[in-house]
Each structure stands twice: as C-alpha cells, then as structure tokens.
Length: 350
Ligand SMILES: Cc1cc2ncn([C@H]3O[C@H](COP(=O)(O)O)[C@@H](O)[C@H]3O)c2cc1C
Ligand SMILES: O=C(O)c1cccnc1
Image (cartoon, rainbow, N blue to C red):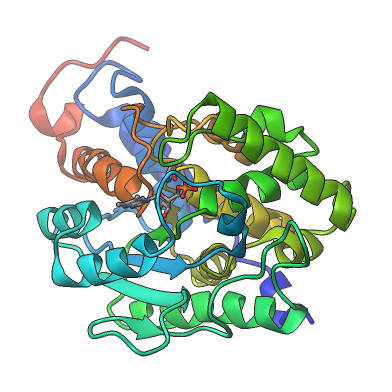
C-alpha cells in the first residue's frame, strides 16, 4: 500500500559544488573557520542545491492541519476545536506563523490534511481522506489507504510549491493532541520508553505528562509496535498532518529542495520520512531545539544539531521561520564577501 514514489531515491549531493564552496570559504576575508556553523551551512546548501551560490530567498511555508482521536483520552491542555479555529487564524493572518511569514516575505499555504472540519474553509486547501484520526488507544489511527492518501497530500502540496521554484521549504503543523501522537511515533521508531519522549505539549502538568506517557506505552504494546516498520507505526498511532509532512519531506528531497525542519512534531515526521526513505536525510536542515522533552532524542536520531534554542514550544513551523534569517545570512556571507585576493588583504602564510 506504500505509494511507489515514497521509496524512490533522492538525488545525490553535488560533490563538486560542495568542494567549490569549501575552497571559496577558505578564500574569504576572515580567519579560517571564523564563521563557524554558518560556513558549514553554506557549504552543505551548495552541495544540496548543486550550485556555487546557495540561496534561501524563496522559502514558502506550508502548514498541514489534522485532528487526533487520541484527544478523547484527555492528553491536551486545550480543546480539540482549537485546531479548526487556528486554521482560520492562519488564513486570516493572525497566528504566529502568519506574522513570521509576512516578516520573511514567504507565502503561507494552509492544508487541511484531516481535521474535523466538515466543509471547505476559505483560503485553505482541503486534501484529506477522513475527518480526524481514530483513537489509537482503541484501534489503529489510520487504514493503509488513508495513510497513503496523507503521504500524497504532502506530495501534492510540494508540487504546488514547486511552480514558484523554492530555494528551501518550511513545513509546519497544527493539530490538538499531536504531541501525544508524535511521542507515540517517536518512541516506536526509536525503541524508547514513552517516559523519555512525552512532554508537556501545550502545557499539561506533571500528572498530565505521566498520563500521556502511559497512554503512549499502552498503545505501543497494544499495536505491537516494537521493531515495527515506519508504515505500520504511522498507520497505528500516526496523524494525517504528520504523514502529510513525511510525504512532503520526501517529495521535496526528491526534487532537490532542502527542508528547514521545525520543532518536535515536524522532526518526528522527518524521522519517519528518513526511515521510509533514508536518501532524504541529507536534505534535512536543522532549525531550533524545542522545549518539548523528546525533541533532543529525535534530533540526535536525525543526526542534526539545532541552530538556535529559544525555549519555543509552539510548532506551526515557527521555529524554522525564526531560524531562516540565519540561513539567509550564511548564504549572503558565502556569496558576497570579498576574497583575500579581491580585497588585497594578506592571507595567513601557508
Ligand atoms: C492556540 C494554540 C495555537 C497553537 N499553535 C500550535 N500549537 C501546537 O499545540 C498543539 C500540540 O499540543 P498538544 O499535543 O498539547 O495538544 C499542536 O496543534 C501544535 O501545533 C498550538 C496550540 C494552541 C492551543
Ligand atoms: O516543538 C513543537 O513542535 C511543539 C511543542 C509543543 C507544542 N506544539 C509543538
């Protein structure tokens, strides 16, 4: 049932462009390595984009929304109706990610990948196989066909974004209950206990967090997810917006478009994407370290180091949007600084 394209190989990094970027960094008017991780970022981007001049100018933001049956178990501090209300807020420009998108000059597309909304909403793309997932404490969240549809909703969103030739993509999510869903996916993929992964989400207290961990551990046992395949895990305890993001990440990487990874939830979607198609891994660029407890372990499994750590715990793509100016700075420095020869600055004797 896994769509065939999901496992198709992503392009290789351009070793020649990466090497040209390494050589250029060594010629720029600064002590060797003095721009630290911004140098590495520019070099990696040059290889990924297969260009001498890495770019982060055009960066569309796509937010995927979905509802979660698991909220019936009392796992979120906020009511489920927030998901749909926030979609409208994204579209009308009042959400955090709406403000950040405006500030960055990014387009913001909102995709209803599976909320409880019964009708199409103005300014929102509806692309969903069902209204919300099933309660995974009782039954599998999604059928294989529903999961495949969600992957393809992500692919369709990337196909729309590609018409404007994006340099990078940012994916965000909205879905009350999705830190519990993400904890269940992450604990299953990593073989960790839910106690290590489950966090406070929108702000449940210590007892609420312990309850989330118990709900997750029970579901992993009930569905037999220890050592299971990523598609079985996503079907059993996944979310429609999360699967859509996994599909979108793979589709972006297959089109040679790097993705700036947001917080805990998007990182879990990215980990699932890497397990489905390991060749997408190089296209994942880190942004921030979320305050959500499990994020550290997920980032470690993705083999990326966050650029910033601001105790954000919002989602929506906000952490990636806030980190984008650093990526832009890395590109501008790489592309525009003078070399020692151009500026007549004496280089270090070799
Ligand atoms: C007003 C509001 C705006 C949000 N924007 C993102 N989230 C974040 O919180 C939710 C996950 O937390 P939990 O698993 O605890 O429900 C997701 O929707 C996530 O994107 C929000 C949550 C709220 C309440
Ligand atoms: O890091 C995240 O993505 C996150 C954390 C808490 C709530 N919503 C999102």
